[in-house]
Figure 1 (cartoon, rainbow, N blue to C red):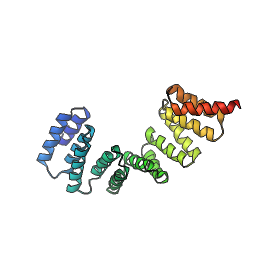
Figure 2: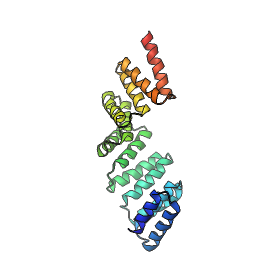
Figure 3: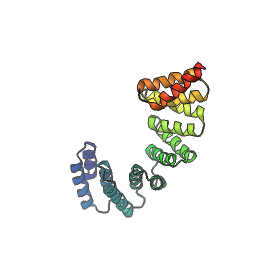
Figure 4: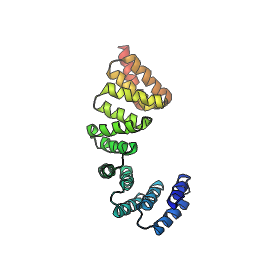
Length: 219
């Protein structure tokens, strides 16, 4: 097992000091190997040292401008700092350099969604779901994006698939309830909102929506 792999294993076990030592040795042995810098950047991100992490990702890109995972790592740093424009730029570079993973498409979608560009976000969420059909987070965000664009039937499909994967997903039940309310299927909407509150009793949005629905039913 090479030294970088040993460092990754140490990091996965939470042995961060050991991982740092191994990645440092890897850099000393092969200073022109971008992978060691990316791994160190990932480690620094994991221990909440984002600015230091960025330096390592930048060094990896300096050594090899086609280091797709370095752009992805930098994108994650910017995303966590809520710098969605810069994160989007980094993720787009990762995509251009050949990284075609569900997580990357999901994060690009999240950037655009947070920037209010829902229509542009939609194909990235769709691709994320295609690449990983069991990713409930991707399905949920895809559903939200469809709902924002008033594609209610398509959104419902995604939310229902979310609860098939995770039957404790209160937000998915809430959004199914809202979708049924939009379609004027009041009984079904109330059933779904009650389910959301059963899972999460302090779900304020579900509670508020249920009061409105019950009030309308009493009229």
